[in-house]
Image (cartoon, rainbow, N blue to C red; front, side, top):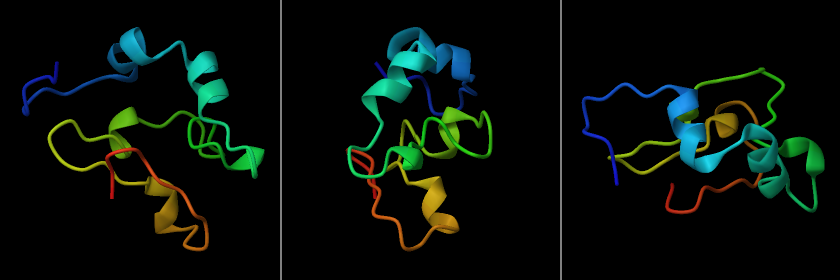
Length: 77
């Protein structure tokens, strides 16, 4: 169930269903480039909502700088 559009979510709320973070990191580690895991970023902990949008298509934040990466989000742009 999606939260209302005006809701501000915290990472803890996201991880309550999609976590814990360690398991999410394991599930999202690319087989070809393990160091390009978006859930274990060199930026440290960033808000889940930077990439994941409940009421709009999600987008890969990393591609703003790393334009040569091939990264996708299921259901995203």
